Length: 396
Image (cartoon, rainbow, N blue to C red; front, side, top):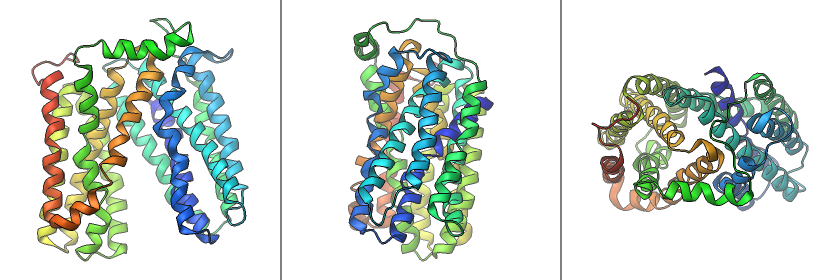
């Protein structure tokens, strides 16, 4: 469990170094806003990581074993590319910055592939729930250190020094990789590249209800995602100041999410992953409806605190169950490829469903918008009836 937590930290740290921190640096250096916006494209490796995942399933390096060997290579490459990004000059050479940032996201996505596979192979099905919640928490702490810590340090140090410090923060991950045990291979490994690329897909789509499960992965958190993509404009619109939002949303919200994923992990041990998906899904939908209530109440710090705490608590539980469920349905022979495919799919609603939210909010008003987001959560819940009815739980 400690290994899972530390590996989560290692995966969360690089993510915002190419988004939040880099945007702040480029803005400070006077880079054009249009170009800063275009830098979001360096995150493409996160959404297409399934393309090179079969390669990591098929080949084993001559040291540390099938998973830890690739993990060490990805982490060392990350340390050098993060430090390299810090030595670029955004004001005079933005293309060099884009190339260095792309290397960071590529090696970061590669680390994600291997860590996801490692967690699935190392933990038993009973341990996956708690393991996934600890991974998610480690990930969030890594993100918080990179974005919050990175921006605070940047007020006192040059950005190049901040990136060097962040590169050094990857060392606990390297140490974890060296000291952790290699998962046992019980089902064999793909012997040819064709096996590594095609067999995971054939094996998955030959299962009963394979398409229903893919639809569920797309729809389970769609209402939650749509609502959260418009919360900051909503808070400002109903009269909260930026300080109030920052204090309540970030501080309160962070700890509520951490608590939610830990509670979710413990509940999953008791109830199993599938039943937990039902409970957490309902809580997620109710928390989205609470925003409609807040729209009616208006400016009230206690009301905002309550809604944020409940929304982040239920969101943390939902994410932990969602991640554990995806891990539980992968075949251990092709863990890296199948899991990378599912997590890439999980990122689709974040981009596609968030696009029309501004249009909806503008035309329906805040109350109407959040009610629509609540209703949109229903299909994802109904899909559970198809492959995970409450009475049938193979976990227990």
